[in-house]
Amino acid sequence: MTLANFLLGYLREGAAVEELEVHGGERWDGADILPVALRRLRALDFSRNGLTSFGTVNFERMPNLQHLNLSYNNLASVPGGVSLLRGLRVLDLSHNPLAAPRLMPALRPLLQLRVLNLSGTPLPGLDPLVPREEPLEPPTAAGRALYPQLEVLDVSTCNISDVASAGARCLLRKARRLHTLRLANNPLAAVPSDFVEQLPSLQVLDLSGCRLTQPPGLRLWPGARLHLLDLSRNALSSPAGVLSAQGGGAALLDVSGNPLRGEWGAHAFAALGPRAAVNLSRTELTALTATMLRALRPLRLVDLGANPLDCAKCATRHLQQWLRNGTGPSVLWLGEQRPPQCSQPPLWRGRAVVAAPGPAASQCAPPPPSWSGAAVGGAVVVGALLAAAAIALLSLRFRLELTYVVHVLRAKRSVQGAAGAAGGAQSDFDAFVCYSKHDRPWVLGELLPRLEGSNPRYRLCLHERDFPLGSLIVQNIVECMARSRHTIMILTPAFVGSQWCQWELEMATHRLLEGAGRDFLVLVELQPLDAKALPRLLRLLVETRTFLQWPSGCAPGGCCGRGAEGAEEAAWRRLRAALGPPIRRSSRHGPSTPVLPKPALPPNLAPAIDDKATVAFVKDKDPPLIGGDFPSKNCIALDV
Image (cartoon, rainbow, N blue to C red):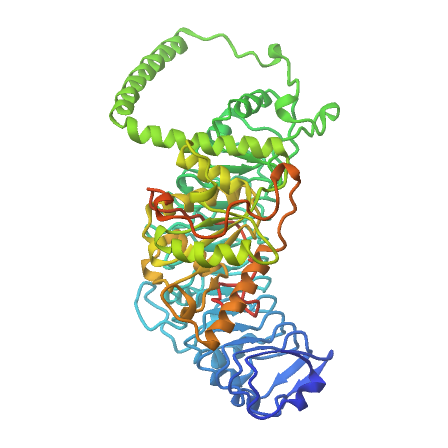
């Protein structure tokens, strides 16, 4: 419910209001705002109201509040009544002139707090979040967690210049469930290497827009791997050494906007781990030497956009050969699948590097080899022959496994080529449905008739109906996923236990990182899932993206009552809203309604494979809400 502040007086005692958003004036004393008790209120948004205070009596009238947004006001301190909300999970106090010493007394009782947003406040450090009587040493001592449920801490755009204090170490040492830490746009000149070493659940670390001049060499919790390490818009001269080589890694490293003018070594990105993605856009690169290109070879994705590449330099020949071979990572230009472009000389500006004439061969001729160089070259050739023999023996031993990998790579490459040639052509399907064979009755008996048989009519892609006969399964999966605008994942315990689901999970990860769109993936939790039993990648997705939680009374095996029927209709509306309007199809794509009959397919047509699934990770600070849109940016299950 959304109200202007002068309409609050019309609320009645015991009103069944669960969500309330209030709009007010430029300056407002909120000592006694709520005229009646709202015991069913779960979410309250008082942002941008010019509040100078928020009286304790207001909190006494909403004891069951879980989400509170007081951002963009004029609060000089945390309202003392906040401490009464023992069930509060999300607290947004961003962009208020808060006085640091007054933070802790109100925040300490909030043991259920999961998200704390203090961005845009004059916070000088992390010490104000730690009580003065809390023992700070020794640094590895165990003890009661200050915020035992805290998962997201945002202190961006504050005035934090030091994160090496004893208070900061104490806070991070005890925040064992923290998976997102944002410190962007703070005047940090340096970060200690052990800054996040005591955070076993950390997935996202944002240090963008600070003043870092040296790679921090961060050490992570043993075995941990970040999904995003954002060091963009700093003053780093090299991307090497951002992480320690002592285990861990990062799936995505963003160093865009740094002046990377020097040459980095061949192992600059080794600490990131296998198949990482690196954003090198706007880093003032004029050329990439052979050594620098060797460092990029193990990566899965690299963005070289908006760099002033000089195609007259001899190093351009290495980059041209590297791009033509196609053996390295996928190359993006500012997030798009475009080849790198020349910036110099002016005559070639805007021309693709791979198509530029480049410098003359005589200008880049290597010096004649010496006898010692020839001897070294001979030794290298012999070593290469021995290595080739060893590879041949291993290939013979694991020929079946290698055959499978080759099929996967061929399928992925063919789809990428088709997508590049089409240049943004319209999709054939509205959604590709990934589900376990155990959930087949619900998909064919409920999902298919609801989306294809009623207005608006969508066209779904089901593996047992729409896969071309005679093709490889992996080829069909990748191609049909690329031809679909969305991918719907039907999440159940059977889905989690499927090997095919794990494989498609990886395929969808590639597709999202290649620019499929932030709304490409639609998650439907058909049956309750045990978070502890989820694979790590799927668990991260469920914790960081909003998903559609199907009403338990109407899931397979349940019988809908009146209340459950209303909840189910609301869920169908949310699912259609996530899919958007059906795509228009020209005559070459056929009608927008399915050609095949609507009844479920006979069981003997079900594939012999287990089932299919997809999902991914992208840098997405504000994921779109499907299950609900107030007030947290994190994963919230649909509650209808």
